[in-house]
Figure 1 (cartoon, rainbow, N blue to C red):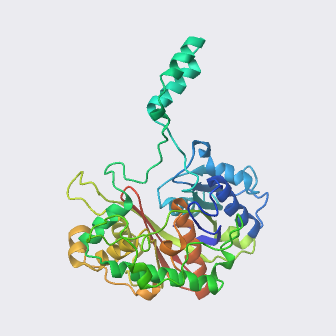
Figure 2: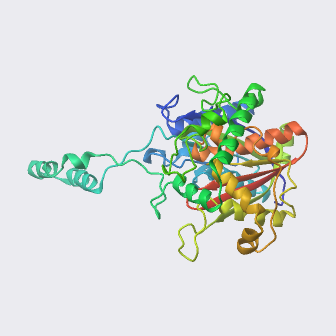
Figure 3: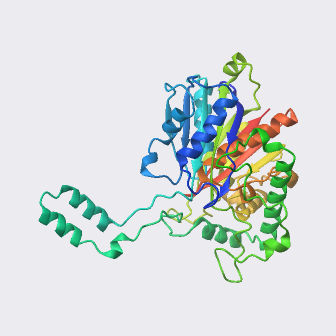
Length: 425
């Protein structure tokens, strides 16, 4: 980073379990709401920003220009450029990183990064036979041709095809892949439930203390994340059935996995000069970013756990920053599954893994009291593309409240990828 890049603030709408409060809301509805709140909060109405970068993982074809349409609806000057991007669960952290590097290079002075996802308003597709029939029908000129095409359509052709969250190369869901990881790393059910319990309790405490008051704006009559269960217990979590492996060896449940969630989040980034000219105090600065990918299929050798890419990205980022894993006051590790977090932490502690895979000594353990102190995705929910922006704003706000410090962000993503960042104040 040649210039320091400030995180000035973030806004999000409450995260809602799929098919609940936002069942009728679109990605554009949600992203526009989160972005409009950010624009209003920082007095950016009719202001031209350097760029808006945002995206969604599951979206309709109508959302092909989602970031631009949401920017136009937010009150920003229409001359503000915008573009879509997608890196699964790392989408809005990737958007943050891209804008940060443009600001650092002096190409732009400010920008908004964000993301939205709905697993309620999903795009339904149909098989290729119906698709081809409809296209033939549109080209048919005579009544006979039209009737012939219509007659070729069968009831089975009208069955919708739901978008899947399975990995195309394996046909397995993330949960199934993570179940494999839990077995490989010997992560038990109780460990996972304990981490899930901490996530819910931390999130509930943060809401009660008013931490999210400046970060979350009401939307569609919802004022709070509706997945947080502050009254849950190990007994309740332990009573849930296995979600991905029904056999006795299964350990992942709905309780220790992030739920399907609808929501949106945005963050405002800027150069120090731009912030100073508007009297805005940076919450924190983004100083380093890194991405990684792993061969989770075994195409070029032994396969790696599908959600283990952050275990590779973080050490590279630490080396470049000249830091140790213990040099952080806060760790925000996305809880796609409690098991994923625990596998990553165990990998960093493993001399065998670090020497064999990372060609270095073990990174060591972290202070667990510094891990996701305001809750994370198991409790708050996980609208895929929104999670990165949610974490950036949450971590920056915590660093601002402390007055100083350093925080690590780690997000696993589909396709065997990981996105990581360091924030400092």
